[in-house]
Length: 244
Image 1 (cartoon, helix red, strand yellow):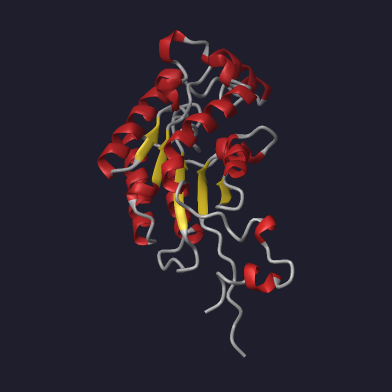
Image 2 (cartoon, one colour):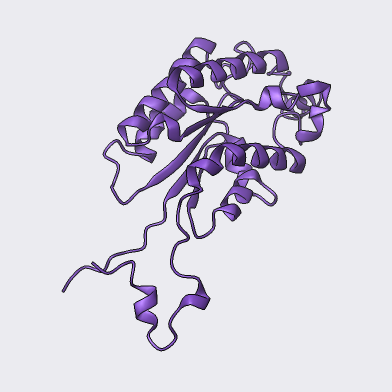
């Protein structure tokens, strides 16, 4: 008896920290991207709250193995780290990653993805967003600690992310710059000074889609539109793409 051929959806993998993990919440940027790609791609959330690029680099081979299955067709991967790496070393040494190591970790992530068949042209880096220090300081105080991040330092990591993307041949969404462009009130994009508000999620979804769309635009609609199914012989319509 021949093995049944299964329907394989291509994947867009979102790899990052809490800003990625939370992206599937109501009005989240990941949910918006997933909605745009229904019946074309599975959007897979691999956001890990609190993680930095050092830990991400260690875990990535367990998330996307080098010997990537031919059935796991990856259309794109977003890499969204830096908001924890940029934590001040003297205030938050557990999450802090030095700037040079951050860049090296991003390069290591791209190298591993390439070994798994995900070439650099399928990778989109996302920089950390700007940080609103007064709002984030309130969050820190509630947790019993001092302000542990600065917007200027987040900007240094954003710049490093942009440089690294250029060196690797990957695309980049520079949130830190875009959200502060033309002296706009970037605080509206943030819910607590660091994480995204509804407006911030909408901003990320809109700008990310402009980079992602060309990578998925030619992917087919998976399985026939219901109105095209032959009622008298549905198997011929539904399984035609799956027969050997």
